[in-house]
Image 1 (cartoon, helix red, strand yellow):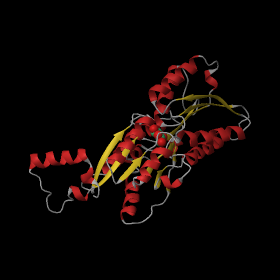
Image 2 (cartoon, rainbow, N blue to C red; image 1 turned 135 degrees about the vertical axis):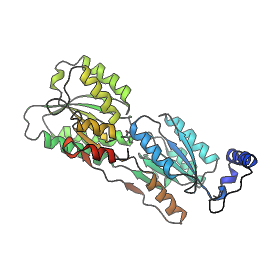
Image 3 (cartoon, rainbow, N blue to C red; image 1 turned 90 degrees about the vertical axis):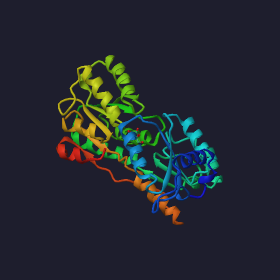
Amino acid sequence: MRRFFSIALLTLGLALSCACGGGRTPPGEPSNEDLIVVGMCQVGAESDWRVANSESMKAVFTEENGYRLLFDVARQKQENQISAVRKFIQQQVDYIVLMPISESGWDSVLQEAKEAGIPVILVDRMVNVEDESLYAAHVGSDFRAEGGLAVAWMEETFQGAEDPVRVIHVQGTPGSTAQLGRTAALEEAVEAHGNWELLAQLDGDFTQAKTYEVMTEYLSSLPGKGDVDVVYCENDNIAFGALQALEEQGCVCGEQGVRIITFDATRGALTECLRGKIALAVECNPLLGPLVEEAIQTMEAGGTPEKHRYVEEQIFTSESLTEALIESREY
Ligand code: AHR
């Protein structure tokens, strides 16, 4: 590890642990000098997906694997993320791994990282910057393609329907790549289908609590609740909040009622899908730790990682699911 001993706090911690443990690195294990320091800036813990994503990172970036991980959780605030990146720059970490909450507002701080010679790897969502050299690589999902999978399923399900297809759309954090991509797919499809009607677009901020609140408020004053055909939920936690609100308001969810579409396909959502309460779960794979490590190892070896690496994803319906399959999934 090149810059490790210039990190004042870590050095102090190290000195203390040496003093207490009399510690020398056991033979065969990497010494602290060899560790690659990764400053990681996570969005928060707003969803089950996010928790699985953090676990995937922590499982890979361990001391046994040769890393010192500095893990920051921004509590869903971009200003906290920007402060964390600045702190990592001051600490002269080897790499910055950033899961950006939203796409805009990153030019200055990423320029600072570039000037400090610290490669930035974007994970999950993207940033909207003029200069692509401000980040070394991006690893994540193609959110527009995920939306396309959901829309294709809707087209097949409502094929030939002459009656209006009424859709409530509950969105994720405004301005995040996941929200922008999934929203774009639905909005384009609504434009293209004369009988698809967008009843409302609500902000669920990717959380169950906020969605429950906004859906309850909306449904309470909606005449003809029984006529809702689809609730397009931009993640699983939104789907959980929507399901709870719909059922409390007397709506039936499932093939004979409201079709809930969700993104992520975590175990909880797949279980609801198998029970028939959620009609479609589009996978969004949070297990990105190994791919981030590959990018870092490529750079360690003097190479250039792929600029954008997208993970493959699939869809699930009750017909394609079994309990054993849900059990076998890692998140
Ligand atoms: O950016 C990925 C999205 O963010 C996931 O769909 C969601 O669950 C998370 O909070």
